[in-house]
Amino acid sequence: MQLNDNKKSVLGVLGVLVFLNIFVWLGVYYESGQKLLRVDFFAVGQGDSMFIETPKGRQVLIDGGPDATVLEKLAKEMLFYDRTIDLVILTHPEKDHVFGLLEVLKKYEIKNILWTGAVRDTVEWQEWSRLIKEAGAKIKIARAGERVVLQKKPLIYLDILFPFESLEEKEFKDSNDTSIVARLVFGENSFLFTGDATIKTEKDLIAENVFLDSDVLKVAHHGSKTSSSENFLKTVSPEIAIIEVGENSYGHPTSEVLATLKQFGIHILRTDQDGDIKIVSDGEEVKINKN
Image (cartoon, rainbow, N blue to C red; front, side, top):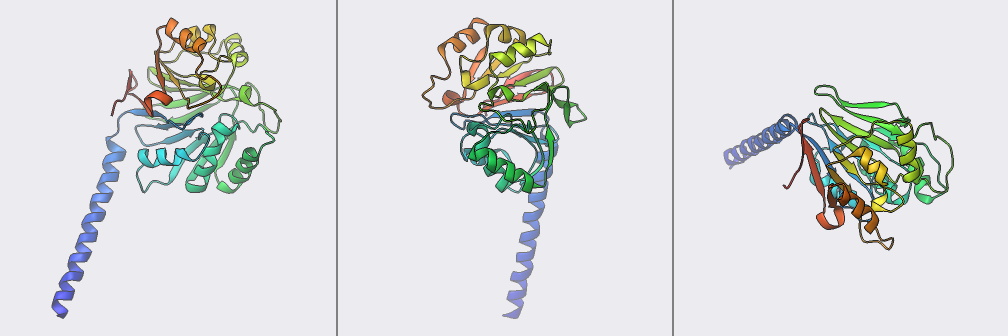
C-alpha cells in the first residue's frame, strides 16, 4: 500500500513538472514567435479602446471604453498569466474613454501611464486621479514633440503630436479638444490615433505643419461630423479608417463623414459592424487580420 502511494506521488510530481515545462515553452514560443506589430481596435460599444503589442511583447492600451468590456477583450488577447501592461494612455478624461481604464487599473499592474493631466469635474475623473496615485506607475504628462519608444530593435515608437502645451491641472468643461493625438510608427507603416479631437484641433495640426500621413487612421469622435474634415483626411491620406462606435443616439458615424471617407477611396471598418478589428504590420505593409 505504501509503495503504491509513493508511485502515485512520483507520478504526480512528474505530471506537474511536465505541465510546467509545457507552460514555460508556450510562453517562450509566444514571446519569440510573434514577428508582427499588432493593433487591436476593440468593440466596446460607444467608446474607444485600442491594444498594441510589439513583436517583442511590449503592450500598450489606449483608452478603455465606457464600461468594463475591455477586461474581456484583454483576457482574449493576453496570455492568462500576463497581468502586466507596459503603458496605458488616456487620450482625454471623458467617460467613454476613461471608465474601462478604471477597471484595468484595479485588475492589472501598470508600469507607465501617459495622459494630459487635464481636469474634469466628473466622478470618473476623480476615480481616475485616485487610482493612478495608488497604481505605482510612472506617470508622464503628454506634450507634442515627445517620442515614446516602445521597442528599439526593430524600432517602434509613438510620436505625440498634440496637445502643443502642457494641460496639467487645467480644467475643461469639454475635454474633446484636449485629446492626445499620437502617431505609431513601425518601419514604413504608421497609425494615427486621434481621440475625440474636433476640426479645431485638426486645423491646428495642419497649421503647425505636423506630419500626419498615416496608413491607418482611428477616426476621431466615433465618426461625428465635428471631426474628420476633408482637408484633414486629405493630409493624413490613410488606406484604412477605423471607426470605434456602438449603438448611440448621436447619429454616429454621420453620413457626412462616411461620404468624405468614401470620396477619398479609404477602406472603412466599424466596430459596430465588424466587431474587434485587428490590424497587423511587418514594417512594410499593413493587413487586416481575418483570424
